[in-house]
Image (cartoon, rainbow, N blue to C red; front, side, top):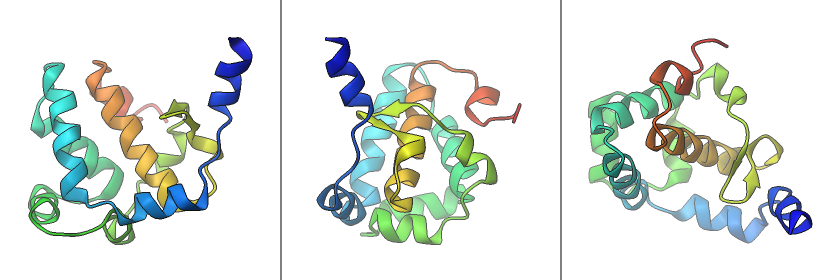
Length: 132
């Protein structure tokens, strides 16, 4: 079983996987993030704080993206990724974030990881890498 777990942690996204992520709509992903964190007692305001930290987008911009048909590819092209985003490490969805070589897929996994940390009850100053 340890060999399977190790292999899972060393998975690399395929080109097909990267293309699928690029074409996903932000508006289709956002409700899943919100549901995940609200089930654990966190708020939409905290979710927006995390998105703002990673991307630089404010609440008005985030709402425009929710209301539009924008893809994750365009969403992250327009983002100003936080310089400390590289300190987001670990495994999410079976992929080791720091080893993902496609910049867009890595940025999406950064956001996934931050949402996961928020849902797990991690303190906001830790999520936002204030000690980096």
